[in-house]
Each structure stands twice: as structure tokens, then as C-alpha cells.
Image (cartoon, rainbow, N blue to C red):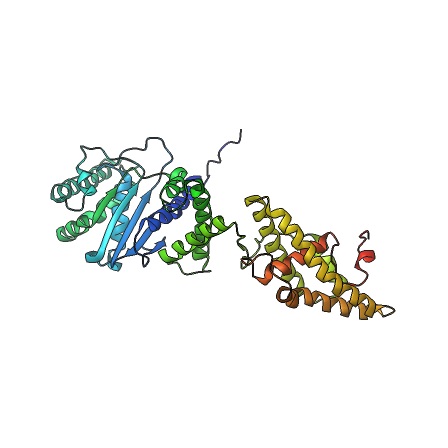
Length: 403
């Protein structure tokens, strides 16, 4: 059995993943196409919709029965501290503050008024002040007695910040707070999303939800890496949902990787480089080839996994690309008969250029939905690994392939 590292970041990693998954479910549940959501800006999740800004502080747990939220909860006071810290950036008149937690709330708790926007917060405000004062006083008493460590270390910053506000500001903040207990934890959010895809056939709901989550996670990563805006609009999500449903209904291939870059750890097959070096193409060609080879390879793997019946179509298209290449290669070999090796390399570079710049425009698409030139470019390099294609007139003999 693998033992957990004492310094494991599993909890914090799951916390961030939960934010992303919750944000997807939250945005999908909105009705306005103009709704937009952000992660890790003013709060864990920030939703802008219908002229309102909603800050949501998320508290996640995989425990079967997390500790119920109460006046003494660390999560409550940490949340209040987070909201107080961003007060200068908020217009409270158009802002709602949500504490979202997988934990439940006791029906007898004074916090139950936070379940309903219309409920009076007056008695709760008094109770919060008293709790905050108690925490601060017990810490002061501990200082006088020389007690170490001081009690309530995790709640103290929130209690002190709350008491430092004016009575009016305390009441104003509390008027904007809503408690949302009993939320799904990260293990169940994708299933919950599938249930809410009411316009999709029941048999396809899980598949559509899975693909939406995959697309969403990529958007979150790109947003945090600066590859896209941090704002993710609901119309983007709806558009992607419609595309996924259409793909499933029409059994179309999706060019998932047309603009993606290979991970830093990716290493292409050495034969890709050997084929390129054989015609002495510029150094820039290698990275170009690796990028497109990875895209084609990733697409082929994904399609074959999603629908094994597509393997035959992929294979037939390989034959089609090989056929077009064979005409070009045969003509090149005739022109190079009796020529110097330098001339052969020059002609080989021209064939390599053809596979990259001309072939994607002259050969029919694999399907009407796979129109990016990247798939053709990359597939030629995939085929070059087994010697089905090559650039030098004598590549078969020089690289040890059997005819």
C-alpha cells in the first residue's frame, strides 16, 4: 500500500479542482447567455449575471459527514475575513456573498436565516458580534496568563476584522450574505451535471457531461496560464454543449487538438528526426514536425478510444495520404536518378515542404469536421516513423526500412 506523504497537497489540489467543477455546474444552471464566471479573482468563484455580482466562497470536503456549519465554524470566520478584505473593490448594493459548503447546517442554528434572502439578520448580527468578542477576549486573557499557543488562531483574524467594521458596515455585509449548505462534493458534480442536461437523450447524458468537463478544464487551465481571458461566458459553454451533442448525434469526429501544443515532456519517435535530418532541413523543421505529429497522434488515439469503428476510416485515410505522397516521391526519384546527394537532399526538402504546405489544401479532408491542416501535416510524420513515407529519394535504404 502506498503511504500518504505528510506534506501531500491533495486537499488543496482537490479544493481548486472543486472550484472549477462547481463553477461549471453554476454557470450551466444560469439562464442568461450573458452570464460570465471567473475563478480565483475577488473570490473562489465570481459570477456576473443580470447586473449582479455574486462572490462565492467554497468549502469542500470528501468526508461523509463534514462538521455542520455553526457560529463557531472556522470556515464561517475565514469566509467573512475574505469578504472584508475585498470590500474596497465591491459595490455591496449590487453584490451578493455566498458561502457554499458541502457541510449541512443545524436546523436550530441561528445561521438558518442566511438560507433565505428575505429573513431578518438582526438577531444573527448580535450573535456574531458576541462570538467575535468572546474569541478576542479569550485570546487577550491567554496573553495575560502567558498561555502558548493562543486559542482560536484560525478564527481570530476574521473575528477581529469583523469587529473593526462599523455597526452599519457589519449589518450591510450580513444583508448580502447567503448560506448554501449541503452541496455536492467533487465526486458527484459530473453526475449532477449529466442529470441537468435535460435536452439530451438519457443514454448520452454521461458522455456529453464528460466531454463538457474536459473542455471546461482546458479553459480553466488556459485562463490561469494567460492563454485566454479569465472570464468564461455562458454562451461559450452553451456553444460547446451544442457542438458535443451534434457530434454524438451525427457521429462526427472532433478535431480536439488542432491548436493544442504538446506537453513539455513529450518526446517524438527518433525516426521523425532521422527522416528530417536525412534531407538536411533547417533546425526549425524538427519542432514544427513534433508539434503536428503529436496533434495527429493524440487525435487518432482519442478517436479510436471514443469510437473504435473509426479506426478503419483513419486507416483508409492513411492509405490515401500515402498514395498522394507516392506520386510525388516517384516523380522526385526519377528526377534524381544519377544526381548528386546534394541534389537529392534539395528535392527531398521540396517534398517535405509539399507535405506541410500543399498537401493539406489539395487532399480531401478526413471528414468535413476535421479541416485543420495540422492533421494531414502530422499524419505524414506519423507515417514516416514506419517508413510508409519519407522525404529523401533513398530513405528506405539509408534508414534501414524493408521494401
